[in-house]
Image (cartoon, rainbow, N blue to C red):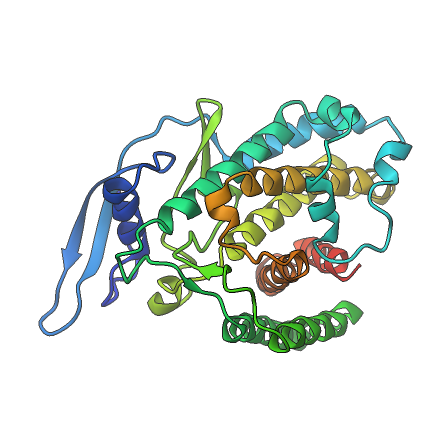
Amino acid sequence: MKLFRRVEAAPNPDVEIGEQLTTRTTFRRAPRVAGFMEYEPAGEPVGHLLVAHEFIAGQADGWNHALSELDRFYEEVQHRGELPPELSSLPARGARGSDVVWRLSAVPAPAIIDDLTGAYVESAQLLGRRTAELHAALSSDTSSPVFSPEPFTREDVARVAADALSQVQRARDLMKSDAIGRVERLLHEIRDSHSARAINLTASRIRIHGDYHLGQVLWAESDFYLLDFEGEPARAIEERRRKESPMKDIAGMLRSYGYAAYAGLFARVGGRSSEWDRLEPWARTWQRWTSAAFLKGYLGVPAAAALLPVDPVQRASLLDLFLLDKALYELNYELNNRPDWVRIPLRGLEELLG
């Protein structure tokens, strides 16, 4: 049972989405809603005080499951030296943005990746499929104004870009970095490219998870359950209930794989900079191939893939926009809370810049 720390005059998304999945879809990879308590002050909309969910006996949340697998991965590569040619040559250096993972998602993982990661790349592909099934379920009720899909338009791109640019300004106020100016230019470039031509009308915005990362999934029965649909608690309720491109959830999970890879690296090397330099290419390799597997799993569900832009250039550009927005949010969070971790989102921004 979860008690909501802020009670607002609108349905809480954790109840709203959970009820939709439980009673109006066949999606069963989220704990079913068992009950909830409403609060209706005189003359105001109904809010929620708490929600109770089905109990799922899990082995670990997605974050700790990933860190456990990464510990084994770093143990395997500890004494391997530089990346072998079959990993260092794919993709070419200088590839920008999400181009890398899009390209890797279209090819089989090399045998060495399967050997070094065990079953983890396969589990990332499974999580991609479960995420796509969630989005397909949330977009399936075309009779409900609250859940029916709507077109994702140029105005939506401008809105997301504006949010990211506001994150740029906050980061600029807190630190000096050449990457910040380059990110700002890339955001303007993405926004302007979409303002010059309409996003393909098959691209949709739907109700999504909204705060999606490895800590929001449960590893149980060699499969995943998706949890906690409240959205980012710091955001206003109308923002958390707003329909959005599924790319936001995809970007959240891809950034989470990056965080896991580098958090595991911190734990492995401590303050030994020479070890960091030697193992960092392996961390990046793990991140790229797990992200590619997640995308491959997602795109294998046609009903969810149809919610994304058909044009591959627009599809990649839209993912870049949400990845930049998420990485900038992370950067500001770390600057304010964990300065030692600032290099993780900075590394993500550098990767997106190419």
